[in-house]
Image 1 (cartoon, each protein chain N blue to C red):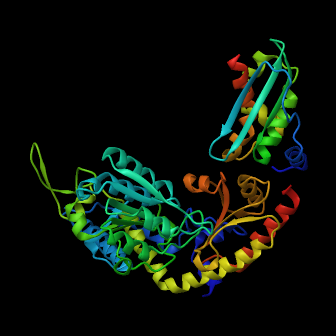
Image 2: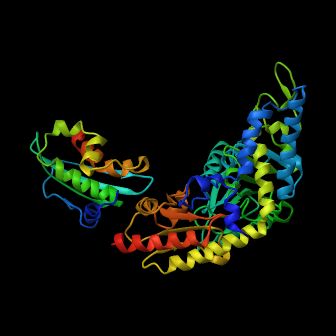
Image 3: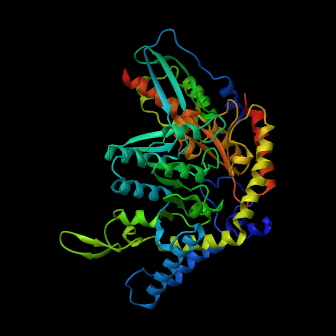
Length: 402
Length: 118
């Protein structure tokens, strides 16, 4: 992998010389192919999908559906099982608002992990309240992995929904989603995967995982902001009520009722983020060109180097399961220096990281901390950048750690 | 942003501790980052005679609260109630990045809360 050459595909790096961007778990940079696609659409092809009985609109409809096909192919499902949303949060919210109606009778519990992002917690709190279900959490182990023993204890025939993340946005832990899904399926639970941090970083094959739903955002995998995906198993989508009601999702309308379109259209009321969907496919093509195996290998290399470097820092506390089980995300704290100070001090070195609770307050509470500093990588980061990062942290620790 | 002086105040904050006698007190927290301070103020009804604080926080929070408490001793209560973030920035000698403003203003806000309670 020629990283120097790859970085030239990203105008951001040219426009921010010397900046070490290690906030990829928040959002990734965009290759020129994705940016040009947005520009080209608005400059030459801007038109709405469906029923525009003119060439441009027909082309846009076709391209939009091709993007759906591209996403479906990327995660090995049927095109009709792909719903375009505005992002992971929107995917999980829409799902949680409507999944209540397809929960089989006798099932009364929702089970999620302690390691979830708020967007995979709060929607389930609301569902639990609205449908009188009980929300339960399974724990995290001391070495920052999901506690499968605890999961086993808490899973039961009563479990209606089992929702969990593929890669933790705070700990970097790669969770055994295939194993967890089969545990859930054995008990007849609907299994939902939050793939926000794994999409574009690891190969995702839904056929192999076996989950019922999976959510992700485009902007964390080189694509445009404001666009995302909800995958749902065809049989379940067919039974589920439409999401937003209005234009685009309906076949026939009477004064007092309506007949919705088939899947996936019934879940895409209103004009969708067309250009976002198109950009998602362009991002996927770029990722395929680089190769997911190659991307994983590069991230492992960067992480191995990072973890080795960080371990040399006196009094550092690292919240990560170790290289074998980790994606390209590492959380840490320096002794007696607040994570926000660490991030602000790194900013003076032109190193961009994130600090805070990373929208995982229950996880941090279980770790008895209120914040971490977090560096996160993507394939375009370099070993030189890791060295700068580690060196800067060493200097900060020496100067400011008390 | 991180001058030696501020780091020194972080390591050894001014006016850190508890007052034996105080007229009002308040607790302040920045929930998102965990800054948490407890302020005690002694007044004669018009003038702030003494202030002390305890708590945990980042460099900006503790250093700023140190400097602000120091500067407010001897000041008229009604005047202090009207002070805002500009007073804090002036005291610090710089304006922090937007995301860090709340770290620097927690001290003053908590002092004002204590005074308003009375």
